[in-house]
Length: 243
View 1 (cartoon, rainbow, N blue to C red):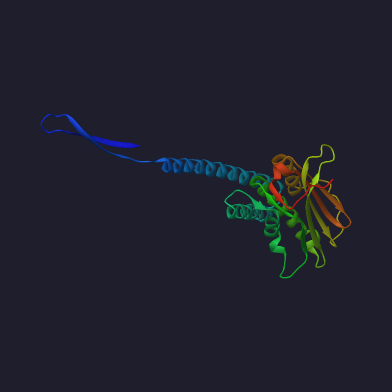
View 2: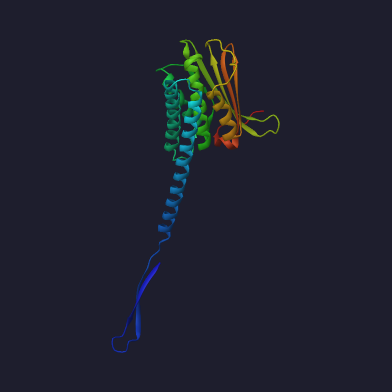
C-alpha cells in the first residue's frame, strides 16, 4: 500500500517532487486471512457441537424411563464430550493422544495406585473427529462397566489394548482397539440393545467408517473396535502394522 503527495513550485505550479510512504501490509493481510479462517472454523465447530448435544438430548430422552435417569445419563454424556474438547484444546484442536483420551475417560473409576484399568499400546495420535467419537464410546463402556460390569465388583478389572493391524480383505492399515472386562459379574447378551450400545456401534460406523462389536461372555463384556488408520490417526509413532 502506498500513499503520496505532489509538491508543486509556488510560482509556476509545476510539480517539483513527490513525498510519499510505501507500506508493506503483507503480514497484516495474512493475519486478517488467518482470523477469518479461525472464525469460520469456530463457527463450524460450534454448530457441530450444538448438533451433537441436540442429538444426545433427543436420543437419551427416548431411552430414559424417568426424568432422573435422563438427567444422569445426559449429564454424563455432556461431561464426556467436554473432556474430549479439553483434550483437543490442549493440542490447539489439531489432535489428541489415544492414551491421554483413555486416561481422562476412565479417571473417575481409578483409585490411587490402582491397576483396575490397564492400558496397553503404542503412542497413537488421533484426529479431532476420532477423539470426539471415541470419547463418547469409551464413556458408554466405562459407565456400563461401573453399573453392571467389571467395575461394579471389587476384584473386577479392564484391559484396553490397541495396535495397528492389516485388514484381512485388502491389507489396508487399521487401528484396532480391544476393551476387555475381567473378573466381573456374568453377563448375557440383552434381548434389545440400549442407546449406549447403539451409540457405540453407530457412531464408529457413521463418523469413522469403522466397525464396533460388543461381545457378552461369561468373563465380562468385550468390545472390538476397528477403524481405518487414515480416518482415525494423524500418525502413529512407533506403531507398525501387523498381519
